[in-house]
Length: 493
Image 1 (tube, rainbow, N blue to C red):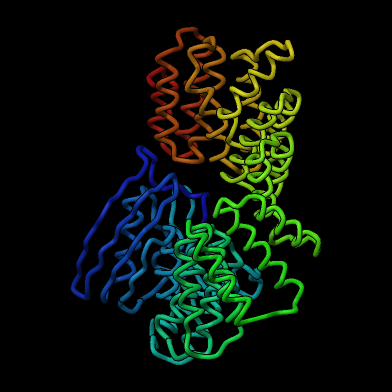
Image 2 (image 1 turned 180 degrees about the horizontal axis):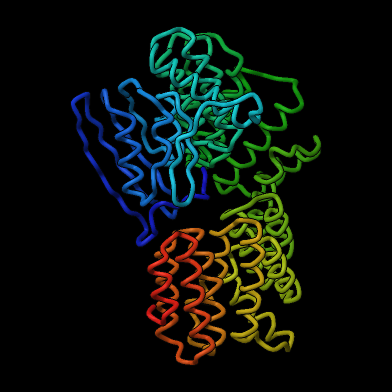
């Protein structure tokens, strides 16, 4: 998913806006929904004008639509796109009309055709458009299955994993007789495993395992199905499936045997048989290191050590897992590592884990704080002050902004902002300036100005207040809102 453009301000956990529009040539229904900061859209169109859809999205996301004249006359669009990232849906809609788009923080720009000096990314985008137009014009052509597979390839390469799954699934849905159905289901299911969407993965791998046509994925599909079942909470069914797999598809392949052992260890852990799980995991480890299984194996090892009341070993396993994963899973591993290091009576390790979390840009800081404070007290160290926490957060946020990671900068500053009562006015103004800068990049100028207004109500000293006004004016100027900028420069925030 593309996170650079955040068209809807996050005022609640989710926001739904729905539009039904009609024209002489047809109608469409468009829903835009924000979930945990990510914007998704659903479109159902029948003979609708692409220009109207793009204009509607631009108006509702407070963006300016430019370059529409470059698209030329387009054919009416009939399509159903469900729960797609908004930017991806826009690219698809425009692609069906033979156009390219660039979505910026303040504009949706329609681009002309490519020249001879096009980059690989631009050529892939143009190939996507060509395939989309061909599918729109010839939806039942036998080569449509190949087109959807290629479109899935392109989306997967660019990290648009949900969009890739959508294209792969369309192969089996629209071309059920195609020889590409097994490959497309395998590709879609494998991505769902990467996304830890175990329920959807169970559905896809069940379909693949039950296909009547012969294919190369019979045993692998059942193994992945067993894995999905474990994570979906059905360890008993997973063990039964693994036993059947060994009987129906015996193998001498070392990698296949090792993978089956890893999944069996997971299933045994799910059944509460921790000792058997550790022994099975040891058998798998003796066959060598498999990067694909290192993270789940480490998590299993950590849970088993904790079950057998070996907190020091469990803490080390969780810390290692944090180095093998990212995002929420990494943060959870760091918290577990700190918790078990404290249980093992190792305050130095707790502080080391906290420094590791900071260096990795983890969002687990607030969850680690209680363990860190307890460790510092045990070691006779002074607790961090509000000012030291501020400086640490400011330094971290500046690093994120320099790497164009506005969302991470916002999350780094949010806890300090929520506790700004402990800061003096100068520190509040410094915090508000950087926080507003990050919020503007992440959520738009109006949300940033709101931050500055709230700070201004708490600041009375001349110099800190001046800093807030200057920041607001600069942000307004950045968005060509010169009347607003002049007003705040005059002291009216």
